[in-house]
Image (cartoon, rainbow, N blue to C red; front, side, top):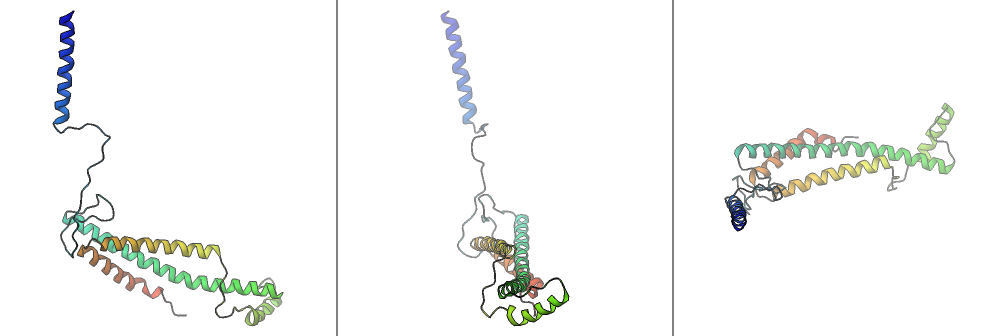
Length: 200
């Protein structure tokens, strides 16, 4: 009986010793720990050496191919930012015209005049009244039109988010990131800048 107990205890001791050895040799089979992420450099001067963290922990382009990919991505994001600015510029002109029409119609309704509508007599009368009464005064506040103003807000959010991403990329002092963003903004302005201030 004592020998059986001694054998069982020695078996338990040997098993636990093997588990301790297996745990201490660097093989950790548990899935509870965090992943090992790459850590980047923090150089506070302009440099071209790879290894800077871009936006998120673990986003560290360390090879030449990864750096080229990041630079192309930043270039394309800069193009998208200029495209968003052009879309907003074109839409601002459209929204201003639509807001002026809406404000003219509201002024006509308040004055008891018909809005542009159904038959030709009413159209002639409303055109005359629009030319006299319906035009808003200079400095008059355009009406709130949800389709226009919500769209304006969404476009502004997109532009602001891209601006913050560019700012964080520039703060790495990685010269290739900065050059890619600057060239992308210049090419984007060349492609889409004429839409920002269309000729009336």
